[in-house]
Figure (cartoon, rainbow, N blue to C red):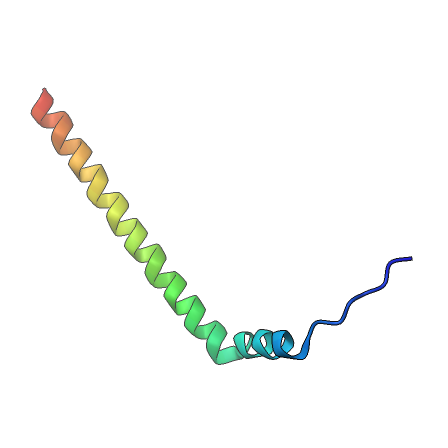
Length: 57
């Protein structure tokens, strides 16, 4: 039979702090910013490839 282990109080405190609604909202906002930046960088590289292809022809 497997016994469950209790998470230590310090770890539990850190976890509960990280799961506060305001912390989650900040994380979601940051994720949105990262996705937007990734999209912009992808578009920049696509334009560079397109320009290089045009110049090569």
